[in-house]
Image (cartoon, rainbow, N blue to C red; front, side, top):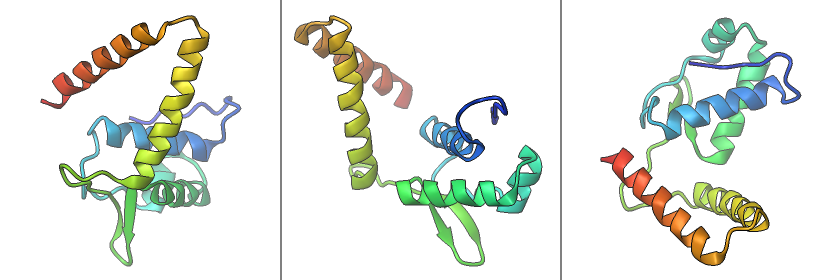
Length: 128
């Protein structure tokens, strides 16, 4: 489930954020599913509760989760056909950076477009 590397240069909270984002994107955690409480997750991961709280706040800021007072933290639902503008902008920025790296690696514009098409078809198959 969670993979934390205590020897990593990345902070524990960043690793918690990345783990949860991946679980949400891969649909291990589904929309409106309740996340473990801060105390529960900190106990499971054997990390400070403040670390988990910081990760949850960051995920909420990024648009992956929402909090409900007294109830907990839940996976945010994005309706079909509706896109989350914050997540879209962040993804677009990361895609731009990745495409710049691929272009620098020597792929032509045509090869990049073929790659995008191939990856899009892969995601479509996975979503069915």
